[in-house]
Image 1 (cartoon, one colour):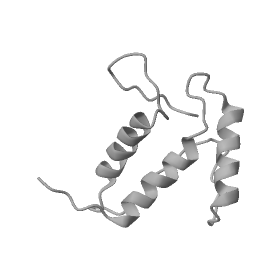
Image 2: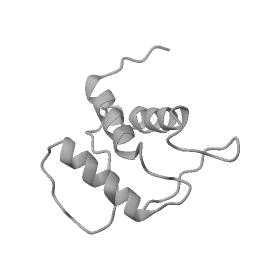
Image 3: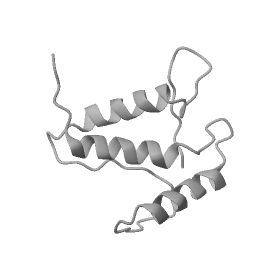
Image 4: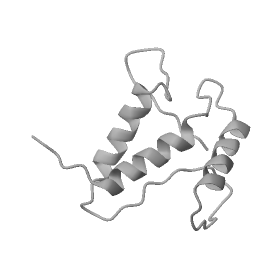
Amino acid sequence: MIFETQQYQQDCINNIITLLKDFDFDTHDTASLKKCFEHFYSHTPQPIQTLSNRRNIDILMETGTGKTFTYLNTIFLSYTKNIIKTNSSFLCLEKLS
């Protein structure tokens, strides 16, 4: 089965990988995560709406636009680029808040 890659999906994946590339997943240092957010937003101007002080990353897309593909591709590429490191053959992501 061949899937057509949409540019907006790739843009979303690239933004998340860029955001998390300097975060240390071994220490889960929230100050480091805050710096990653600040660096990303200082170089990627966008309208920001603060809903809470929690540090969350949301993928907001309409129904039928490929959210599942985007989630899975983000996890896969993060793992292959060593952004997310694991000590076993299973990939485990922890909540970052």
